[in-house]
Amino acid sequence: MPALTRKYDDLRNRLSNLGSALVAYSGGVDSTLLAFTGHVVLGAKCLAVIAVSDVHPAAEIDEARATARSLGLNVYEVETYELTDPRFQANPADRCYYCKSEMFSLFRTIAKTRGISWVLDGTNADDPAQRRPGRRAAEEFGIVSPLLEVGLHKDEIRALSEQLGLPTWDKPSGSCLATRFPYGTAITDEGLERVAIAEAGARALGLKQVRIRSHGDIARIEVDPAEMERAFALRDQLAAAVRNAGFGYVTQDLEGYRSGSLDDGIEDAPAES
Image 1 (cartoon, rainbow, N blue to C red):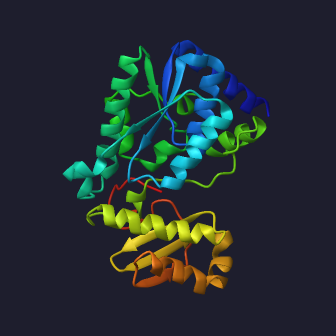
Image 2: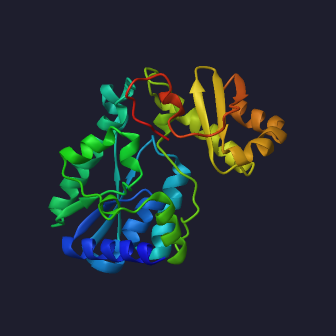
């Protein structure tokens, strides 16, 4: 794939020209490719930073740590406190803006204190079409998005990751737990914990791409269309796992997993996972 090779060369050259970089690293497909390439190109001048908070599933944080260790990345962890911001907690349609603003502000401070020139994120060439409010925060804080700049799309990032032997190449898409709640529903520690426990229970049954959307006492389960029949076959165990998390009623969404399902009916709402 000459075009893909060319894009990867462009990415390496872009990172090299930056001189030093802090990568917002979540352990997902995009940020792992970016952090790994930064590590290869910049060595000790590339720092992968993990934001740890209640809005990120603990299992995903653990996976990010394990992946970073296996790849030899230079890693730093910092705690973020989204729930202390009443604007985030109120869960408006631009909630992600407040979350990213706090995170990027903190990352910029870390970069400055360590003499790092740039802060990078894993935005790819497919993301602008989804109009995520976090992009506004990235622009305000001068965050660089190399994957977007060189035109790498999600499928290309997965293909490159597989070629490079990265363990995340086929990892399901992830997102913060706040995306499980309809806009206007307050984000609370209790609600986040309930969703996290329910999703962990669903994944323990072997389901890969799964979201537990929280509608009060009702859990609406979204799984990848390819897994819908399996999920229904496991309905007794799945319902028990979700109820054990604290939900009173369990439903399976017949449309399956789709990014931004809670944006339906909201004008100009940004898609979230």
